[in-house]
Image (cartoon, rainbow, N blue to C red; front, side, top):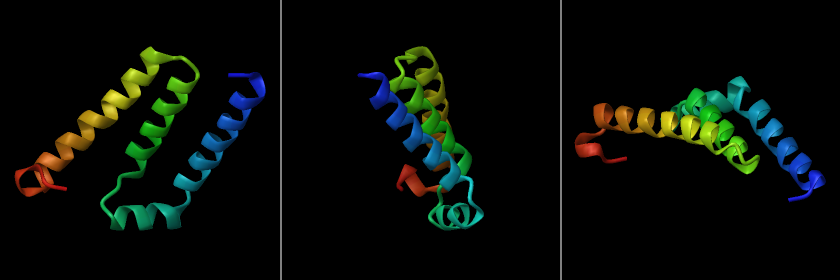
Length: 81
């Protein structure tokens, strides 16, 4: 991927970070049971992956996956979404 394309991806991730940090977005996501901190972690993991930082991507995405699974296990009957 060329430098310009990576810069475009970074701009999209930057915009996503800004949107996820807006209180009104956070409130809407929370009403759907989505944790903003976990969403930011997933976005950071994806950003790391597209930069070829697979170790960091694995850490961030694994952390988010584990936390989502743990939350689902404690809040949903039989792990249903």
